[in-house]
Length: 64
Image 1 (cartoon, helix red, strand yellow):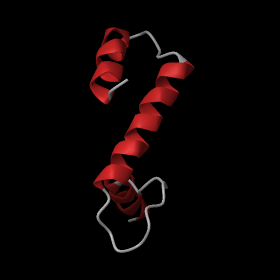
Image 2: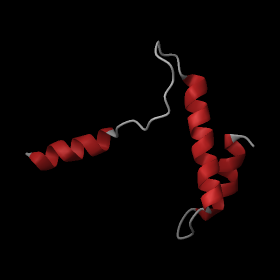
Image 3: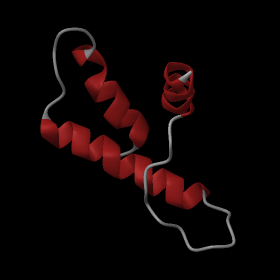
Image 4: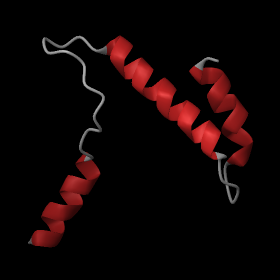
């Protein structure tokens, strides 16, 4: 299943409904597969979450 199909399938759940765990896992798997395919770095690809710029900015703002 392609990522577009995954996103279309889950579109109706926007709002109060939650995605089933299987759908969330499917989205996560597709996300990491896409990240790996787009990886052009010198080092081997490692599937680890990146930091969030918003979270960092919030932390800096709250620290001052």
